[in-house]
Image (cartoon, rainbow, N blue to C red; front, side, top):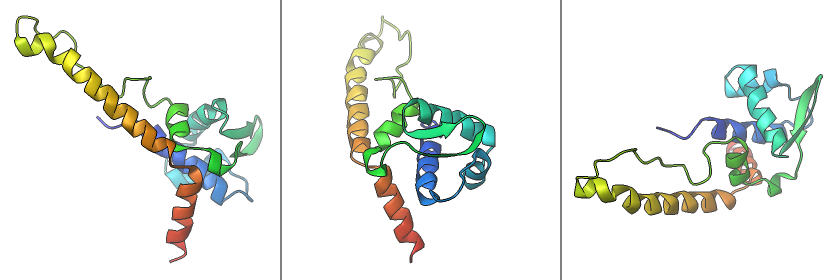
Length: 143
């Protein structure tokens, strides 16, 4: 199972808001770039707004970044769009057989490994900003 696409869509929205900052960024416009329904965009934008990453005004088309793009990390986006609950990126199956030596011990063995992997991924996301994403896209478009 993949991480929810809300994460990549959130990054897409924030990047497009910066690249298109001098224009009106309606949910319809953003949806056209993501190639999805504007309702999906509005839902994710609500999450980004709640996290303090974007500013939107009810009844007025458009949105803008609420922070400098160098201050918004991919971890901020990951948390904002509620991809997973804290420490629950990997789920462990319920009710393994306690009569089996593996069943008895599998959860306590792999849960710390899963937590370590999630922590490492989140630390990595913390070091990449929306500014990094924007720079990469601008560079690719200039070639």
